[in-house]
Amino acid sequence: MVLFELLFFVKDVISQIMQLDTVFIFIIIVVFVVVAYKIFSFLMRALIVGLIFAGFPLAANFFGFDFPITLHSMLSSAMLGFVVFFVYSAVATAFKIMGLALKPFRGKKGKTKVVYVKERKEKKKGF
Image 1 (cartoon, helix red, strand yellow):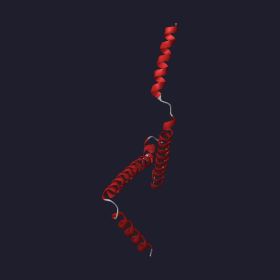
Image 2: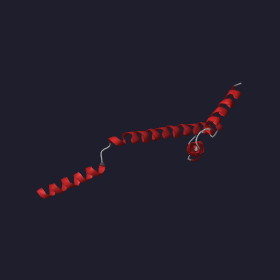
Image 3: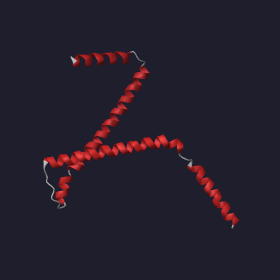
């Protein structure tokens, strides 16, 4: 029953999209492709970080630490890697958003440097 409702919903969405202008449909497709690419690249980076963290028990044993090499320890390390990567990505995104939001409130750096140079030249003339 839920599957049929989902199919009817998809049919309605497609019929509504087909009524839109061709340029608007092209813009929607381009936005979808860009978002899909961003998500795919994010997931691939997360997978690489997870694989690197999964190798931690092997590296620990290689360097002489008594760390068990089991599937459980490798999966736990990989999950820790995923969590660290997702937290890092969330914090980096928050910093980018805050930087963009606070950009209008920053002072103009170029004017400050020019004023500083002029003040310095005036001080030299006074001596």
